[in-house]
Amino acid sequence: MFYTMTLNPALDYNVTVNEFSEGMVNRSAREEIIPGGKGLMVSRMLKNLGFESTAFGLVAGFTGTELTRMVHELGIRTSFVGLPEGMTRINVKLWGSLEGEINATGPECDEKSLQVLFEKLTMLTKEDTLVLSGSIPPSIPKGIYVDMMKHVREKSPRVAVDATGELLRSTLPYGPFLIKPNHHELGELYGVTLHTKEDVAPYAERLREEGAKNVLVSMAGAGAVLAAEDGSVWFGEAPKGNVINTVGSGDSMLAGFLASYEETKSPEKAFCNGIASGSASAFSAELGTKEEVDMLLQKVHITRVR
Image 1 (cartoon, rainbow, N blue to C red):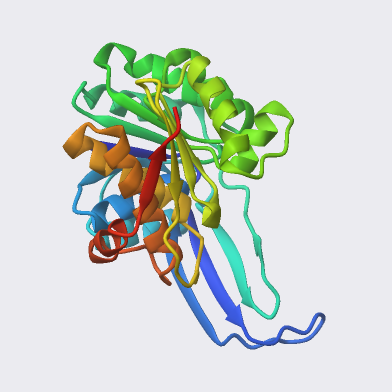
Image 2 (spheres, rainbow, N blue to C red; image 1 turned 180 degrees about the horizontal axis):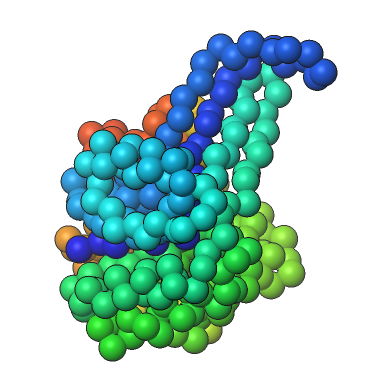
């Protein structure tokens, strides 16, 4: 069973404005509201691939109620903790002649609610996978992911971490099954700029040496790198296609890898499926479907370099 953790979910308000004029009243050409947050994106892609998951997280106020309703409407189980004050954030994404986004801070989290969330983790077993994904709100301790990994350690679930900076690095001594930085985030960890797969590979291996079992590095159109638990290193080429929307493509890659590994226990097969899943979402207005992933899977080429 898959479980995803989103500590600061959001309603993403996506607005398309064909021509934007600063200081003037602008009319939208299209708008939509979707449930956002990296863990929820992983749950959504797992659902598209035919895998059930339970979404953990913190919600608040009327926006939290609406987010929960929308997630249930997608057929995803939730085990959210409702915060006593505040409201789940709304993030505004602007598309069109001018592009940008405004991400809200999110509600304050009290100690009691956090304890309730930790109690929910006791249901995990060694047969399960827990995905800790995304940033954390300021009111939550910076070591929250480490605390969660310690909390479930006796149950021995596989833990995947998709985070940045110290939030990611702090989890390495606790042996996450999988981490998934992109090449920019990987470079920031070591104070270097990484452009090619050849640049990325040594640093992916360093993360594995520091404790991660598998390191999956996404590089957008340049492909991906996998430093696997068995010591092998793989380069993957991204399929060619028309990029429509890259939001969620990294989360889709993570979901695709985990879904395939659940079935095959093969890092290289999981790597191929991860690349196909990330590409399928990048080539779609929404997250990729299983049919789109399966079609792209035939075009994914990986090479073992070590």
